[in-house]
Image 1 (cartoon, rainbow, N blue to C red):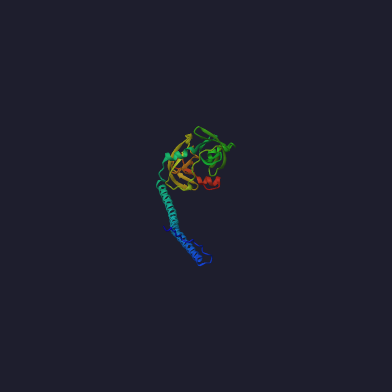
Image 2: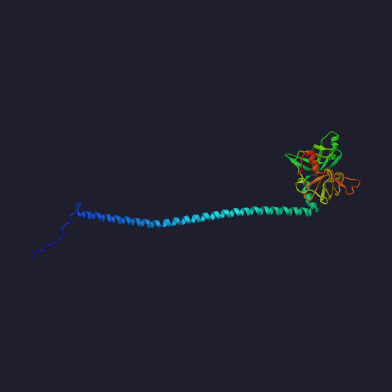
Length: 296
């Protein structure tokens, strides 16, 4: 038999540097690297596209929201202006309604409601043998000034004393006359206690007119808590004339309107039986002579 021979591939021979084969291998490697670079760039670009699109979309949304916010701010300004206008209109309407109600009912008095408002601030005032009424007029820290007529406390002056008694129900306080005007027939008595006072004088907004309903409250003949009603009959210089019955002991008590505001101090009646001619010291006269200022 013929011996078998196995043929094998010739051993690879490494390309020598600088040879054409080496140059071809380098070109092939660079080409592959370039291709991979292009591939990587494409992948990066493809990945970046959604980000760019998303960014543009977000910018659009931000611009849209900014525009909406500006529109809302503008609308808010308009709403605030409308609110202020409506509030002013409502306030004007309420004031008009109140004025109309006051005008319609100023000649009608709810006596029980008025008495409930003022009774705690009306007192009996005694000076020697004299006796009259008074009402809380000014309140300070720990003291109250009671308004009354001068002729109610003049007995104390004649006896060179400035102290009087102020009473309400079972309570009693010593009072000191701090200011007085005999000509105007008004006086102020200080009590070292915090007592109720009446509401502001009518200059606060309800000046009286002839025909207005009024109520006199005081202690005629020592009968504390007595109320009589009538109307404003006329105005005299410094005085208010009324047909509300005024009797001895009423002097110094308040004459009030339908709002419980003080018009003046009930002072006396004309004639033996009165005949519906009662006179009241205008509260503004007291303020001008004893406080040197306006009431209210």
